[in-house]
Length: 426
Ligand code: HAM
Image 1: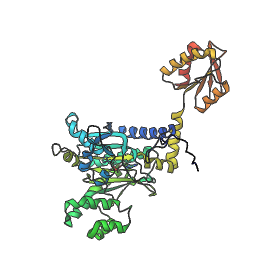
Image 2: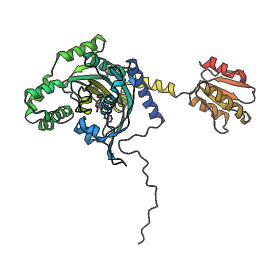
Image 3: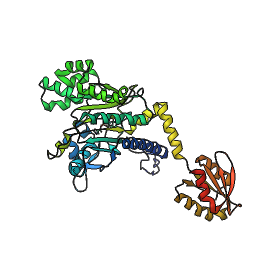
Image 4: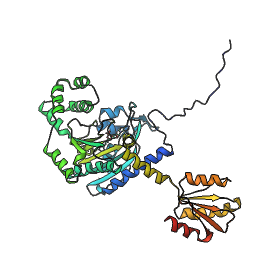
């Protein structure tokens, strides 16, 4: 029997790679909304924007980020035989850039950055293989005032999306609780990273698994996690936030240790109150990283946090107040100002000349690229949210202006059109 030969098909996959997203216009609008809120609030706090490269030497992450992130690297050898990796996070780049340019800037630096990051993670809710982060870091300040300012910024960014203390909580801890504890138990320093990782994962893993990782320290660690810890420093931090009316947004939680290896002191993570999602943001102090990456040539204290777009997006959709605020902003942003209706094709050239002038004045304008029925053009004007429609037809050299909200129409000489539009729309 002759088998049918399957038709040759285009085998190029039409889907994005697992864990990667296509941003269609609606999703791009959401992304831009998130970026604009991030940028606006970071600037309110006097942070300035900077950016690093998306590709770095793999070594940069091997040196100090910790085992977990190195396992998740998208790394390869480039054509010049260099070991390189797509950045999984920004902090090592920041430390590298600061070490190279430190003399050019007065301290403390308050820098923020918005960019895309790549981690070869097991895909799960809230975790993809690419995501965007806002990073906010303060370099060159040891005083607790900087930690308070940073946590306040993180809270205010989330408030900027319409969230309240009922929606999210910043869980704050101090790694010193654990390092002091390890020291008291005579645990060799080489073991600390593994143990901190186990504690970091304890909320997401079974007790048995955590106990196995912790070995003989399991019982005292569980006891510490259950009874909690306090310190004068953390209380001072909460007092600082209370003075700003932000204390209800935070909770002290010794179970927060952070997965990355370089943190040295206060650490924090932000979660939704309902406990439905993964962490929205996380950060802390990393006072030794710059010194470690620069092999001791420069030592500067540092602290910062990053907020990802994925969980944040889920939470915006979950909380009606935040969702409505976003929808309102998106609706306003997607609207055009003017739709030009070309009722008579002989007027197309005149219309285009005026479209050019009005666009130069900053108006968002659309019009039909090819001959189109007038009714369809008005429908387009409505669909695009135009505030006015300009009609080019038999009335020329006058142009009919239609207020799309009230339906009122008026004739204006085309010579006075720009001034008339300014009076209506500005
Ligand atoms: P991180 O906790 O690894 O910290 O990431 C910060 C945030 O980025 C997370 O809370 C989460 O919202 C988001 N995120 C991380 N991985 C993924 C993923 N695979 N998919 C979606 N979202 C993700 C850092 O990256 C530190 N470098 C933050 C920092 C800045 N520390 C000091 N300065």
